Length: 226
Image 1 (tube, rainbow, N blue to C red):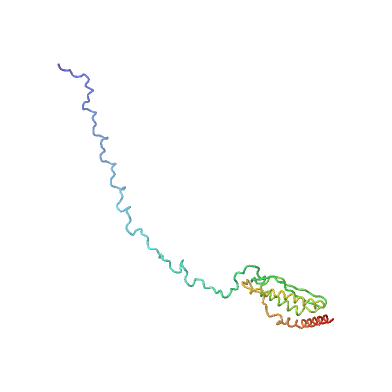
Image 2 (cartoon, rainbow, N blue to C red):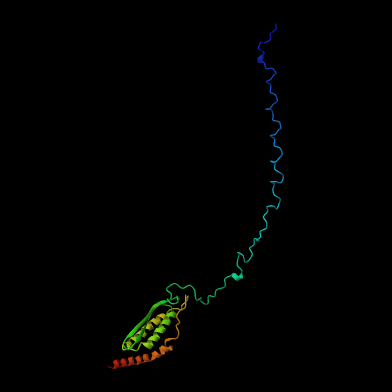
């Protein structure tokens, strides 16, 4: 006995509209999205490595070895001349300690040099105090000593004060003689000049000084024989 055909034939897939047809979702065919050779392709030679020597460093205008006389070692005309240390320069740096108040040289010391001027009725005592080097102090001493020899005797009391003043100045002279020769002067100093007894005032003062010496010796003899 044969089976009749099913009344619901729709459950069986029959070839029809459902099978996938080649269309827009199939494999994309070569079309406008494929990059065509054009302006975005690197042009031959545009960004290629430059030719040898294009960006190479050009030879420097100044050679690596520095030319003599530029910023290197100066040549002979600019080298420092040798210093002669045998003679001290007149304007060297002053040594430590007080300097002379006249010329600024050193070493210097403080001295007081006295003088006396006698007149018939009145008299005048003089002095010069300061810090001097040997040359300036010696100049002041010779001037004050020679003037005292010539002008210090002419008064009653001056006959006694003048020899005392001359004797005190001799102690100052011994202090001056102990100073070394001055160096590093900052300016002109005083000229010591001639010694005391080679000056006109000093030679003239020898007369009253000799008279005082004779009187003094006479007094000593009288006192010794009394």
